[in-house]
Length: 563
Image (cartoon, rainbow, N blue to C red):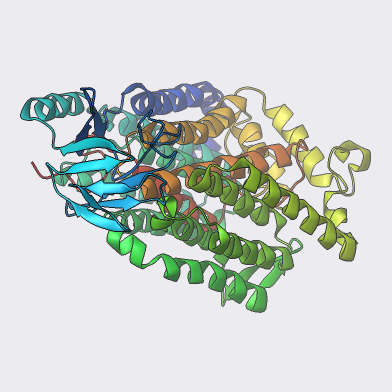
């Protein structure tokens, strides 16, 4: 007997099942995310030590990064509180082969290497003496005892096994599939799509375990959110389920490919201009060939397929903005990065995609501050951006019409506030536990499964699961901040912080825009909204976060240290 036949024979069975799983889903979701988030946030990250500098008065300072600024300033990685030392005096940098280079950062007191003046840069060997403004420092390796102690600490920081979370997530997917089949009736795409997602998830975990990889917390969160994405797609557009599943698979492939690409920082450095050109090229092609949807020219159609190049441009933009490592310490000039950002934001403005333009600009501010630490420069840039926005509104006043309903949605509930008022009503009707997957009505409203997907989560899954989805994005960003303290290279720190900020800001725009706290900008909820381009972009951004995880065997993005 098939499920539709069973429900026809026993109509009360479907009602009972829906009532039961409404209480069970939040428990399962909490268990899945609690284990993953707890493992991400509770384990301290012992930084890897690549050498040490012996100080004149005794003691030593460990070098825990591949790019180390030496100076008197508070922002220096190795702080030397001597009047003759400049605030940013020198930089001591390591490449992937283990070779070190010493740079003079235009210091007043000069840099000496074994008594010889360093004009620009010079190779450094273990045992060499470095002089900064007359202050001698001895460059030494770790002792055997120190290395053994550090390795013991790092082995103790093994992530929690994710098999229980994967098992609970599999149960969650099975129960959600049955619930959606009850709500939708005979729809063969639903079980096949959910079965495909479960199979992909387990194949991924098994494949990486063959290479002794551990720590699948980020992927667990991503697969959980992707499950919610399939659920809202099944509720609103079941014909797009296969497309959304394919997007998850392609996104996972992009996640793996980009993660492996990031293992070689030399390769990253060589391809930064390619990525910068890709960011501009993708947006320029969209402006010329794109189709207008919901007031923005941000879609390109190829037969039955359509995609948003701006979603992929986010990845290449972060890549290009983070990869100019030499500019971190040699010059604080942000001109080229400002030009790249200005061109990208300008193209997005011409496309009328102001939500994505805001995301690019916020990401720029994060990267610019991390690279320069200069609030004055950023203030001038923000002032210029406000002035530019004023000029655009002056010549294109119709732009303000898109924000006319902000804060006044209920005053024009049948007009400009139609989407937000329906979203808030649906969200309120869902309560804490929701009406049941596929049982809502908000999916009849345009863009319900994309721009308004937070409302669909609240209506069908309840406030508990909706807030857990938002909290999981915040947990990823919080982990990134903690992990950056132990990151090997500045590139990983910059890219991860930019990607984490982008995910959080995009989530805020989607959530707050759908409930009229912020203007509705047409921005998707990462991993959750229906859309192939957005799904692939979210998985690609996750690769930057994965690269910051330096726990023992926890990231395929980081080459394992030779023992």
